[in-house]
Length: 600
Image (cartoon, rainbow, N blue to C red; front, side, top):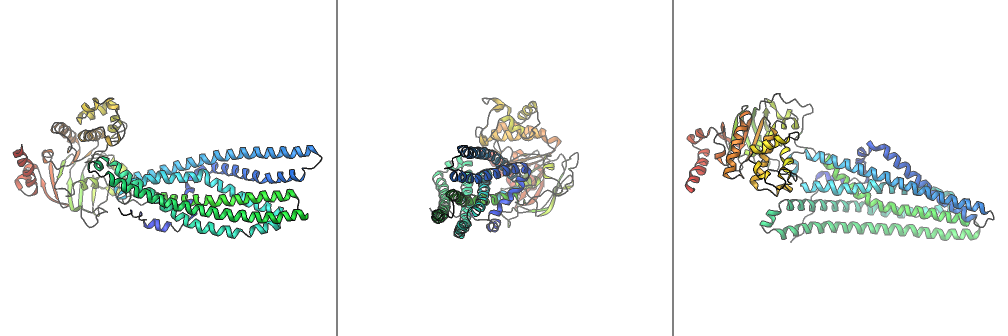
């Protein structure tokens, strides 16, 4: 099997690759609300850095006065060193507690912000990105950011302070030796910058592969029965293994690059220290500096070298976090194809339920050259029950999706009680609509929670009544824990018909002025269909009802039947009128009723 292609970057990804650590500035809006916590963490960080820098001074005093006859003075130096160590321990613990709490808080806010953004995106957004990749960004990428905020940044700042402070104190201790040390700085910085740039690109590729494999796994696991039914397990394993190996290969290159950078930097730094120490030892022998001063200088040099080494290592983490931040920012800045108006009009009250299509044309973004609807004009009166029939791909479900404003028409407009849906806030007018989708969605929760999803404030009795109306009470009551029974992920404990009845009960409970039924009874047996059809008939009396159906027996009683073909309305009327008129509907009726009766 050929290697899987690398995930194709979007245009925004290509642009963002030119940015480096500056991408982390995008985290500042999330940290600003906790600026007090940030300030406290910085104070603790500065305290620990200052205390760390005072330790070599105490060591010098002890060494230079080690042979003094004043034992009390020597004791004081040792006690001072012990006090500094205690202060360092307290400051370090405080710094850890503050920055860890800050990191957890900021990452929690980022996760919520990203989820808040993507949960409201229209379906066209998910035509461009897999849900598994979105979940990878929310989990894997935010975990990287947590590591940086909760650890790497504070360690980097502490080492930066030690580097600057240590360098200044080295200069005060011995300008000559410090000058020699500074000669190796360019040799250290060059590999950091060169390899760091490569490290960032590899880290981004690694994260892209992780997201791609997560999306692939999510898709396969969500359709595991289909995968197994078509004996596609081996191919699925192979595809996932390829993506995982590609991710590992990128990770291996990242590790190799980072390891090489660490080796080069540490070797150059400590080579310089050894050389400087050799020169300093000669100065001590010549009497140009004391032993304590040399030890103090060496300790500061080691601290500075350690800080540089730590910074070079943390640089890689910051590079990875910068890539993760870019990916999260892309989600936060994603533009939705469907937008609420800046100043939304109020939904007319009370809602009558009149729905009008005025010369509506629409093509799905993924299929721009194929018209799903073409010049549709339709006026649905309040309280009217209208059924949409036609062959697959005629545009029936598209009408439902446009009424819910999952998409906006390319031409024309759709109105609710005379107001263009584009002038209304989506969440406001959707509250007036109840939907039973073609593929009912059952959440990993109890039957109670699944039905109450239609109206969270409904009482238990109202839930029971909705379930009875949808012919669902019997099988729910027979479950091990009745309405409290856990239905499993995607309702795996239920049959297709039972899932559909749960979805119908949810819509009945919503008690909305507009009811949308998209193949609502397609998975029901004849007895359950008859019971649900009776419930739907009763429910539709006081509300506008739109029914999408392939089985014409479920729409014979509709006030009006709209026949669609290739995105156009080709006929309208009652069942009897359309049968008498001939054409597509009469042909469909003949196939379903006459042939069905003959078969029976």
